[in-house]
Image (cartoon, rainbow, N blue to C red; front, side):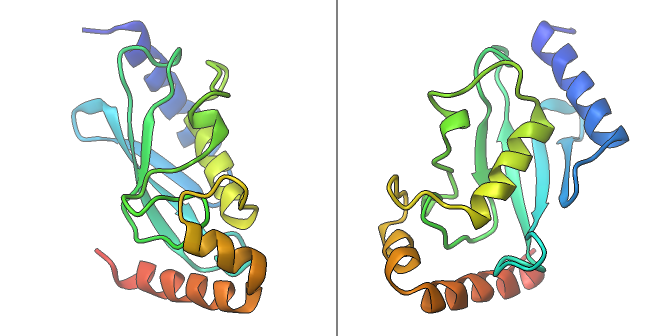
Length: 152
């Protein structure tokens, strides 16, 4: 059965495969276009450099009118990422628009890594450290990056 949401996800996948943004990859899980696995690589020349962070995107039949549920599977230490991996990002909540596709979602999350919003913290310890002790924050981020290489 091909619904509007599934057709749109096929288009998103085709676009992402043919013209992937730097440092991002994503694809539907086997036989389920509604559930995607994605990887975001930490941007160069940032504390996140070298990290490979896994995410899942769960779409509903309301996509693209409603945003997917996006979570980090990898352990993260970031002001806008909750302990369960869910992400505090305006375009995934109240600023969502159907013009966003999977590539735009992943690109926004990648830029959030280096440009957190400590005023809307999902992880108050990370937010406080980002604001008050950047060196220690960057050290914790490096630990997460190293863990991302060995995590399955």
